[in-house]
Length: 195
Ligand code: AMP
Image 1 (spheres, rainbow, N blue to C red):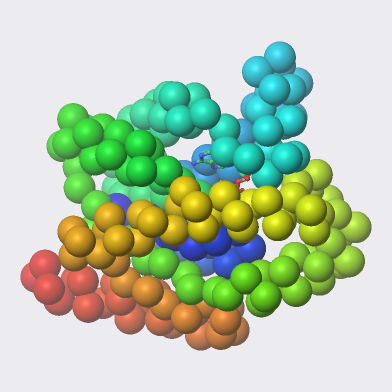
Image 2 (image 1 turned 135 degrees about the vertical axis):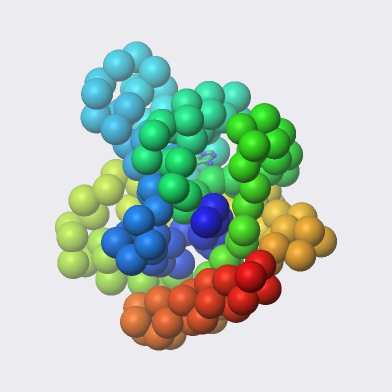
């Protein structure tokens, strides 16, 4: 089973991806986590990427695609994967289609967590209070930019996947457990449809 968990920053993609990994043995492919690892490694590339992330902008497609191409060929992805935070642009979505065709794989579903901006802003404010802003891109200014980028570049992909019959939208304002249940319900439906 190959999934995309889609949604704006702070929608709960990481939390739900971790549950899908635990429950279905899928590999968690988070481009944000991969980039944070590159930043933590302290390379020159990591430094440049960190500056882009701190501004709330997108890291160049070619760099992201190189990371994803390598990651999807690792053995743990053979049993299925959940993409979290990727694709974020039309170019990334098209490149993903080409890459999956090349690897002889296909997407089963794109599960979008729908959360309005006001809810995301109040959630991030809570997270900053509770963690003391552990992530350097966790601040109100960066979030505003991340949301602008999401609406301009990433949200249009909803139509891209709706047109392909892959899109399932879930109300992401509900509790973590309720969202998990809604995701499991979608997976059950897909299971039935594909026999
Ligand atoms: P995330 O943890 O997915 O919210 O990602 C954190 C930051 O990493 C984003 O705000 C971007 O700067 C960068 N990033 C993560 N995934 C991508 C992607 N697919 N394309 C471009 N930039 C990304």
